[in-house]
Image (cartoon, rainbow, N blue to C red; front, side, top):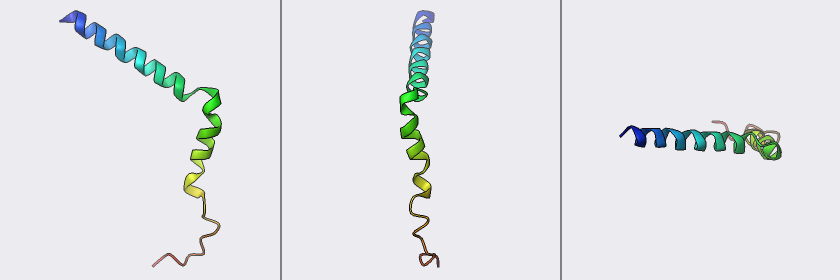
Length: 52
């Protein structure tokens, strides 16, 4: 039973490390910058007429 727990812990650590590397990879920076601007897209065109 302890071997199974150790295996699950090791697999979880490897998956977590892989996810962190994939997330913080420098080539993804442009995609994150674009995604960060999504909430602000179209605010300049909003004239307030959609407010109640």
